[in-house]
Length: 171
Image (cartoon, rainbow, N blue to C red; front, side, top):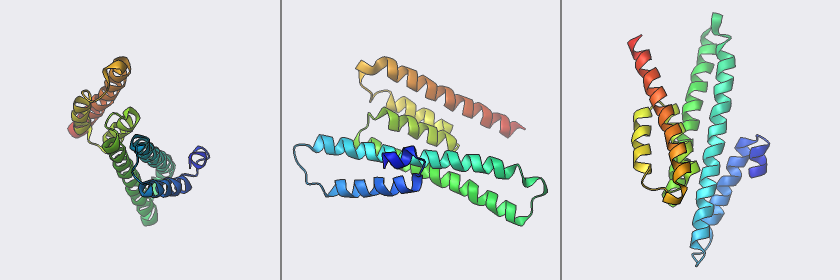
């Protein structure tokens, strides 16, 4: 699945991540539960990363198709609506996969980072700020510098999104 992801074959990668999660769920509980749980969190995060890439690709194609809308007809508008719904769908699936990874490992910083970016992209920066504040207390203190750097970057994105949102409401 990781090779497919690197080769930008995201749909195929998703299918293999799903299959791996299904296989992992059939593994009997043992003393290695911690490694099973970590593998599950990693697979969910990999799914989230794949959905994020699909979102990014749909964003790129939306920009190129929207540039041809100067004399749009009904079909162009339908295509644009589909691509917007595809973007939202990919972001929602990314959010769900991140939540699944964090359910398994609440300290998974990469899953949290991806989750916050998805929430911001979905237009919910205030919720993202609240989640950042709650997450501050779950990360290990031995990674304090990394945590603070990541969280301040996420806060900056949230605040920028809130400002842009407020400006668009005023205009």
